[in-house]
Length: 69
Image 1 (tube, one colour):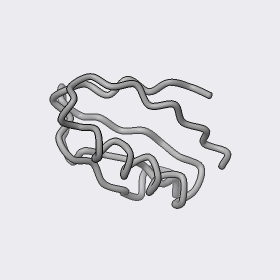
Image 2: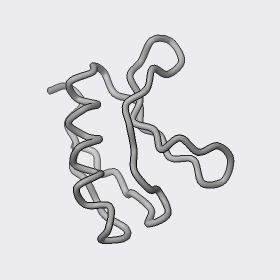
Image 3: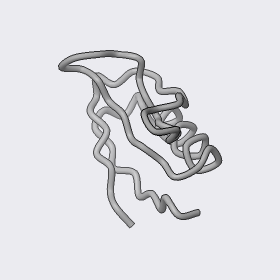
Image 4: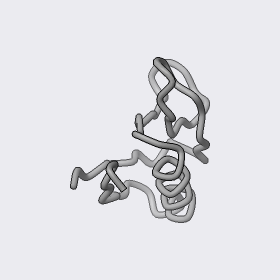
């Protein structure tokens, strides 16, 4: 499982439709402070977004994520 390092300036994230019809966990920013992770399906994206939003006040976190599930 890959580890995703979430920077402390991410803010809250949400699920958005990315390029090619992929669901993406995105913080709504563009440029230097943009954070996005492409997921295989909507269920995986919702789960990852909930986990990041629950831990975002801790600063930099590592999230273990299995995109296949």
